[in-house]
Length: 562
Image (cartoon, rainbow, N blue to C red; front, side, top):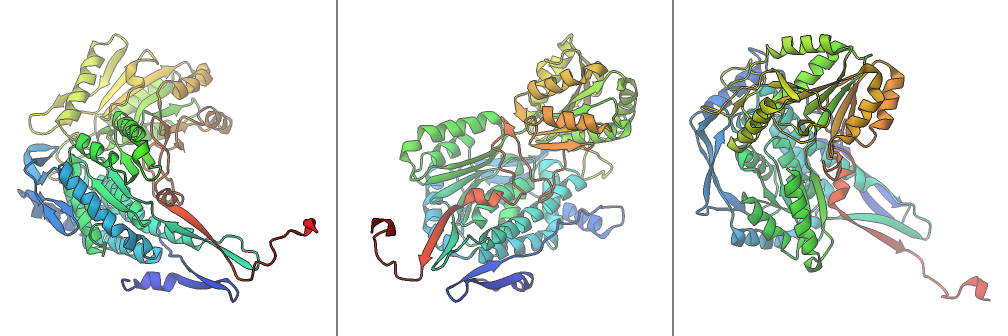
């Protein structure tokens, strides 16, 4: 075992399972959410970040596949480019082929039993140490790599690659130890306990580009609970993801527990789902990809040694519903942030706004006034940038087609923005659209870009509009209601009960914080396993209940038989 961190050692509690019969090791640790740094001019964190950005300038980091301690290069080489300057290659990496993925599976399985048998507190301290590294000496590095690789501003990188990732590691460790500390009822002469085993096999983690923290959590949470993991990071987040992997190794994660294997999506999916040892999928990405993987699992069900756990988060068509009693300033500020921070590329970003006709003139005026002040550009050279380029050429092309559709539709009109230019980076100006038709495809389908669509409804038809909000889109991730009338809020909560897994009242639909607002939605938004909450770690265990009797069993006959 690794030597215990001082904070964890102080937190360990030893108590009898039942007096004189058995002792159970129970542990808890006190953690709080990581403070978010402000990066104001002249601050130490800003200076450290700017130095880290300077250190990365004109560098292309070579990132191999990693199987155990072996760094492997294949001939299938690719490059990650900076979204706001696509002529700049920030990372060189390679795809693992089928043979290498199978090698990774075999190596992971060989390490599984020993890892699973290590105490939860022992595994937890690795993630606590990783969090400390990210909070301190590695903070500026992970922020800088998230900024240049994924096009985030300093504050967007900070709330993601620092604060949220640190919180995932610390709170998952806390939740895991608290889970182990829970006791079952024991009646003399027997004692009962639970062993939280890892799943029997390997877990495949498939992570997205838009949050460095999600990649760390998709791979890290199953590993914390005793599993071995094949981690396929997003091609457009390779640089930051590899840094997270190296931090975990530096913190003491043994080789072969997490295999770092960038790969072509279909090759990875085909390989992992065809293995008899596949036991879990931890996924964030598109609905079609998740559905495809689910179908592959179903087709291969007879070959598996156990029923696989499938956890997925697939985005949303998130709403802000505004009632006539709403505070207009809150609506405007909350909607602009939710819709356009990180270019609308958050799973929780608001993309549809429902406004009563009585408030629309005032809201429209303020929205357009504030919209004119949004700066889109290079987040490294200009810290005044509110958001930067969208992630890649594919995303830019998809958004551009939507903008062409908007301009050609008689039901839609652009109120502001909508220009796009990919000559240097994949830049799309924030676009506000008004729709006359509440059933237009733009109010149904996820765009994943900086496009906000407004539907203005007759004030007295707010109930009918709440029904529209609930039924228009197949997603169910996040949503917000802005109203000062408590009766309206109560009514909206009932009518929108299934419309959002994270529901906000007088606040924007983005910004969920680990342990405060565990995140996830249902319908086609995913399996709603609520990462960031206390029950998420249980998803990655196979509990074993043990009953031990401490006295002879006695006669086999029951008393009624006499």
